[in-house]
Length: 402
Image (cartoon, rainbow, N blue to C red; front, side):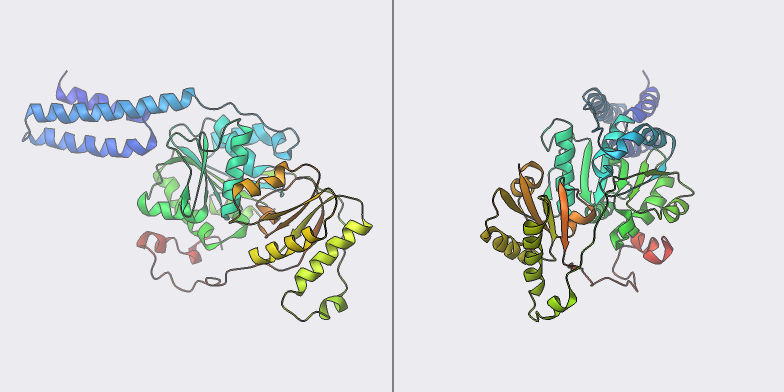
């Protein structure tokens, strides 16, 4: 076979390779074609380079075939509302470059959409990337999806947060914070590691999310094989649809329950002037529930990690019979975080606002909310894009979802 035929054969097999290898193989192939045209390289040198390129391409093709053969089987919990829209979502992913999924908290979006993408044939030539604004949500959701696939974390499912990456090369699904994905665009501007990207909690409109949406809108023009899913917990999805050229919107109904709202009398709060008054009031509210209400699990919101620790100590000191007091915050080890899902019997969960939208805790009957949350205010208003890379400046916030 002539050298030209070898090169032509390589070009025809590139679409069978993994996404991350296609660009590099194509670039090297173009260089070899130029060298062949110039005629300044010996046939022996050309044959050696072509053989090396063919070996690399063959390894990539074998990897893709292996991933397709061992793709994990997928099942869905019937109790989740999103399961009823499974076929609609899978079809929409197959037929559209961008879709918007809107669903209430607890509908099952975060754990089921990545599995639906797997069933739609995604995750083979690249990973399915799923972004979460919070580290605790990224790690918790990754573990939950792995459990539903019948695997350990670090096999088909991994996660990446600041200072920690538990995603093997062979993974199909990668859960990461939006900040981590934004950082990856610096090293890999076209994000060839992924064939599908899912931006969750898009309604929060953080600066990272807005930048990512701007970058991905441009990237879709350069990568027609890429699929993008925007997941939002609000009904205000029209702006996302318009931004992505009237992308289809799929709405998922949530599970709703009658809610009774009770406020602590204002005069009792005003009597407390020290800075930890809300801890005292929250503990009193739990005490009132335990004494006067039907028994049920309690979720208590606190603004900081220290508040959570102090509140848990106070509640544990009351020694409620048959009741587990469980903290939940980002730095808590997973061995303790997972107790909110596995503990048997009555429980009181004391958490940051990560349990408000990013996580769904089963069995909660009562919620005690201090009305306080720790919020970073360092970038509440962006007036300049100075200091960002030139590519990010082109996608600066003022040009995004207005």
